Image 1 (tube, rainbow, N blue to C red):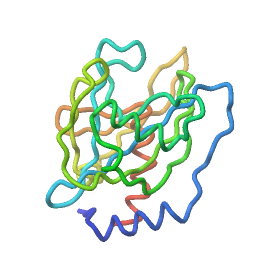
Image 2: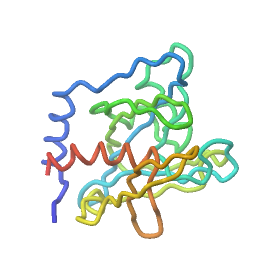
Image 3: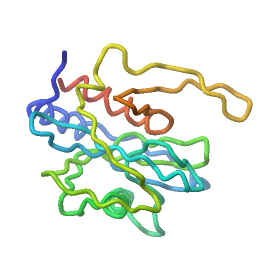
Image 4: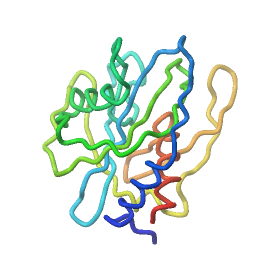
Length: 192
């Protein structure tokens, strides 16, 4: 089984640094940014996910990376870091951004810029209860199994679209988060 360790992380940094992210120009779409947080787990690295509150108007009850809307004049990377602080309590000085993934357009009209960041040490998460019900970490190796991802077709506005589904324990990760995760793991596979 592939192992994502500190040496893999060094390779991942180099891979992300060597490639420009696809930056989509779509000024009519709402801009958002998310953080793909890598956290140390004692024996390697995990990814941090949040379960969005069931009371939210958009994407309620879904699993997501920390993130949200970009404020006027705010740099995309600053928005990703700010949102991670607001939603789950990760202080900005604890986040080291190591790369940007390609922009993605959502079916709900957002243009999302994902950023990969290392959380330098274990932190106590402080959840913004109005947006986040819980957080959980998934070891990267658990996402590198041969049966992941499962591709299913999902209906949206009378059409069917392929979607990536990742499972870990009782959680099912899909939708935009599944797309971002698949893109990220494509780089992880090159680093292990």
